[in-house]
Length: 49
Image 1 (cartoon, helix red, strand yellow):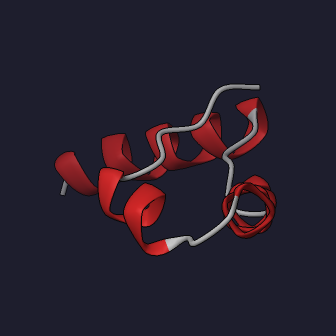
Image 2: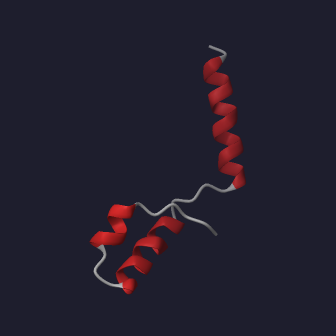
C-alpha cells in the first residue's frame, strides 16, 4: 500500500517507531474500491440535482 505522509508528520515524529504508528493510523482511513464507487455514485447523484 502507498500512503501520502505529510512532511510535517515526518518532522513531528521523533522516532521511526512514532512515524510507523502514524502510518498505521492512516491505514484505517484508506478508501477501498467499494467506497470510491459509492462516493462516485453519490457525487453523480448530487450533480444531477
